[in-house]
Length: 304
Image (cartoon, rainbow, N blue to C red; front, side, top):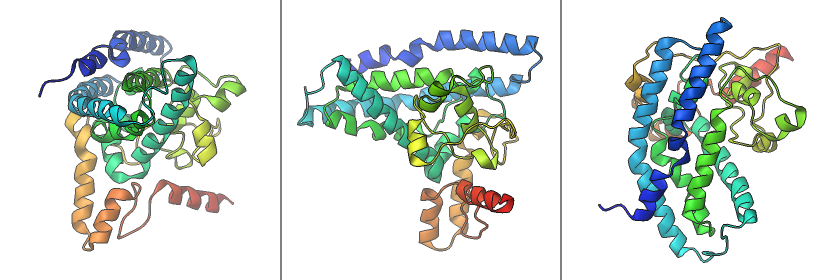
């Protein structure tokens, strides 16, 4: 299959790929700072596992990305609104909010549907939060990711604009994966996703589970009830509720799929097998219910 020049141009101009040397430089600076301050932000094996996941993600992402962008161009040609949103400033501004809204639901889906969590969990598998963790992306999530953005070309947005905005969002999200930045002024914390908000997102504490899914903005979490503030009285514990014992890249990337299919095989009813795909992680046909919302309700009831 011959790849159209328009898609090749987008792939070659990908902002996140071009920014990779900058990301690596920032990692070096942060790790040196942590070492001088005797902060346990980095662990050697964990960091190299993150880099391995990054490489694996890049390989798996290539075909879905090409197919996704090709679909965007095809849908754009079919759109009755083609040409409405040229590259004026207000079109970019409108696209910024729409893209961030789509990202919120994509990211929330990654946490609330187990089939998608299986592809996203690798990003949360590290028990450390640093700029290396930012590059430990969800591997399997790449297969379905671009489908969430397909409605945007149908709305009349140029696919090139859509892909650029997706890249800008990912570029922004790199810097919030750090413990080096404390809370920012209240107006910024209220509107934007910040390091404080994203530390909560990477927490395994019951209070913080499955919160703060926003990309650039945190307003969607506030609107849809998934916001949690970082509290000084409850320090964040990074990682999963049941952490991996392995630093093997393939285990990090694909273990949850194996566990999900094992659970499905145990269920006798087809309705229960389906629930293992579409319910949130922690649901079991045998009980008890260990989904994040259930655990949080139990915690709140016990402290009331």
